[in-house]
Image (cartoon, rainbow, N blue to C red):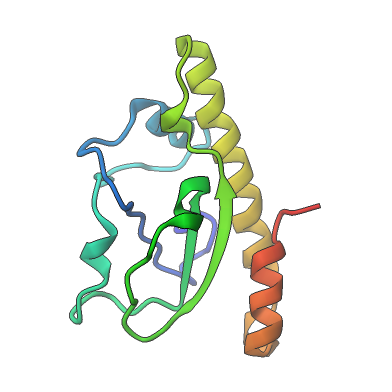
Length: 139
């Protein structure tokens, strides 16, 4: 979102159960796409639910498992949507199979981000925006 958004957004990434390290397979995907991964770190979403956290306009949960988790109450009540993607970190197999899972997740999310960025966000009402966000990238 930061790389594709042309400065329109500041995006953050966090999880419900951070591992403590950024997976090298994920870093390879960013590198292959020409996106800087400098400063990336593994962090909990609790970091962004505190009163002094950055104000969020949109929250996208992406891991298929996250749809069933209880999310924090986000300050400012941003628009939320679930963009379910199989968790590549859960894949077991060969190095190539694991990298392929990270690649597929990257491509899916990159496509959805590009569609999101093409929406006329200033002219869409809240309910219509929610429907559009929930359907981004779905057939």
